[in-house]
Length: 134
Image 1 (tube, helix red, strand yellow):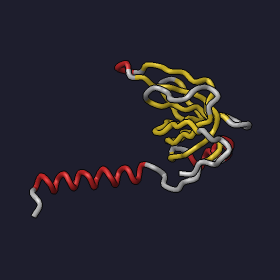
Image 2: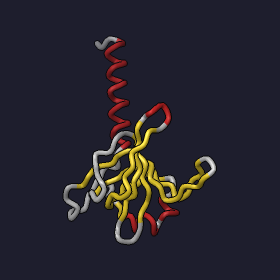
Image 3: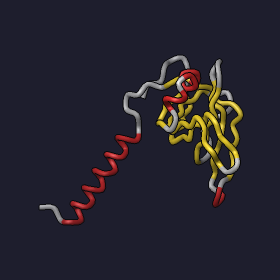
Image 4: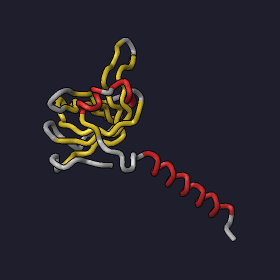
């Protein structure tokens, strides 16, 4: 027989596992920047996984002095801006995998931001020749 504390701990562990399983696009294929931009209406406010090359990497401090960084994710045909909390683990010129929510257009204060990914995952790709899946 399980105690109420053990049941709560088991329920909590199950909830965490379910959240983790749905937070990552299992088996989802990554897009190119060009593919994302060609179907930007379809992907507006949707989770996306995109691959490209890093340019214009900038680290900044946000509210409460929490670090974040921005960069352009590029391919031969276009680019999207990326914003991510934390400190970058990549450099300009690196090939990267980015997962997050894509916004074709969004108002932020007095400006309009276009073609931006608010990232939850940014990883350097060490083998840019192989397609990244999942």
